[in-house]
Each structure stands twice: as C-alpha cells, then as structure tokens.
Length: 365
Image 1 (cartoon, rainbow, N blue to C red):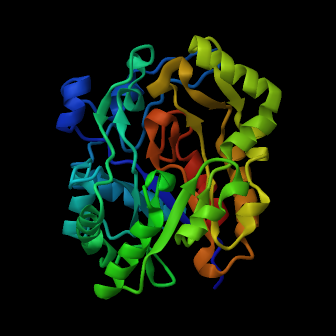
Image 2: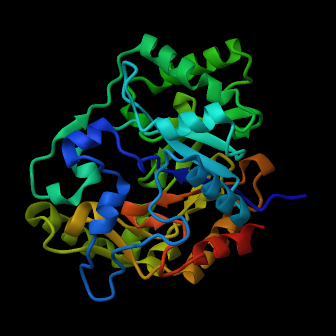
C-alpha cells in the first residue's frame, strides 16, 4: 500500500520547570507562562490561546505524554521529533520528558531527535525582555571530537530503540543550525563511523534550512542526506511584496515594534512550496499556524487568519509535492505539535477544537 506521507511532528519539551528557567523568569516558568499572558495586538488577533482537551499539562506526567501520542496517532502523525538540547561539555536541558519516554517504553509511539544547537537567550522565551539588553541563559559550545563522541554515546540508546524513526533503516537525526557547527563534515563522518561500530547501518542526517532554497548544496557536500525546507522569507516576500517587506524590516530594526510583522496566512502558504521541495532529498515542512507574539510581543512574526480549512488546503499542496517520491522519502515535517507560545500547534484549543487534527486526518489517513 502506497504511503501518502510520513508526517513527523516537531515536539517541544518545555512544559515542565527547570532551574535555568526558574533563575531567569521566576519559580515555575514553563511554556505556559507566556501563553497565558499573551494579549491581542490588533482587531481580530487570536490571543490568548487556551488549550482544550489536554489542558495546561506538565510533561513530567506520563498520562499527558500518553494522551498526546494517542491523539497524534489518531490524526495520522507517524511520530514525534523531540527537540534535543546538547550545549557541549555534556550540558543538557529539558531532557527529562524524553528520557522518561525512552526508559519506560511508553508511549509506544515512534520518535526521532532534532538537535536544537543554538544558544538560549532571554529573548528566546519571554516577551517582557523585548526592549532590554539580551542575556545568554546557556551558550551553545562545540568543544571538539571528544564532546561529539560523548554526545553520540548519549543518544545511542535512543537510536537503538525499536520506536526510533528511520529512513532506509538508518535513524533520522535532524540538526537545527548545521552551519553553526565548526566543521559539519567532521561531525557527520565521526557519527557515521560510530554508528557502524555500534551495529547501526548509519545515520540519516537532515539539515534544517529556512532561507532561500538555491543555496542548499553545501549541506550535501558536508554529508547530509536531506534538507528540511522552510522557505518562509521567500513566501513572506511574495505574500507582502518584497519592497514592502524590506522597508518594514528596516523600520522594525531601527524603531523596534513600531510596525507589526503581520502576514495573511493564506497568502504566505500560497507561495510557500518551491520546486526544490519535489526533490527526493528535500523534506518540506507544513505549518498549521504561526504567531510568536506570546513570546515576542510586537516584535513577533504573525500569520493571521489561519483556519483548519486553510491548513487542509496547505496540506493537500504538500502531499502533491511529495507524491512521486520513494516511499521512505515521503516525509512532511509538521511544525509543530505543541509550540503554543509560537501559536504553532496541532493540539486542541478552545477556538478550533480538533479542527487541525481532523484536517490532517482527512488528508493522510
């Protein structure tokens, strides 16, 4: 039976307190903190966003993780891509939910890892600091070969888990900012060598790319198997007009949030996919909604007017793009399952209920 799509949903684990967030934002800070404080910035702006079925969950609770997996499976999601934070020298954050998934064997739902290799700053997680000087919470470091080996050994039990998502029998590993790695080829070659020594057939490396799609060849030169595409700048420029976008960008850069970076969701999605997305080694992204104002206030990028019906149309275009690819490569990354403070989620809310889940299910199942 032919596969319509291998839908892999990005999954954010920042729904439980950690000491680093407590230190900068106050005791008990989680993703919900910003979600609950969001306010509408213009007439018809959908804020705040309130979860429905799952409530304001805590990912330390296995019941919450089980409910998420069941909901995703029912909608046609193949598995979750958990964001994985490794800052160098063994420093990790937000690892507890995934560690418990791995150790317990539950939920029995496929997964893979995405290395979110970027520094954490105060602007990353909270809008109240938007006018203040940015501060580093944790710096992303690349200490060298020994750290790469330690990193590999840390994720090896996940790679060997029967639930781990593979492409051509190789565990899929996504890297958020491949260009930030001092020598990406060295990293990839080393991990592939370690994989073979540990009984794996290799690793299927995917580089995330969010810029113009005509400059992706270097990823393949470094050894990446595929690129996860998000041609947002291209789509936004088309939706608003390149000149207007550049003028507004300069105004925001000079005067802060004097003008909102607001787009019509339908128009952006109309220009979103490119010819590059048809290539076997390019994995497109589908986006249900996008509104980062809960984190960034007036400096947020906002796609206004998303509905389950428009998301379904966007999905159908994505499925058309990948329909002739080999079965293993019919991958659509779903951004995201639960990025609530980015207004970028599939989980039910009070406004749309199961609308986005139903749209996905009607397209892929």
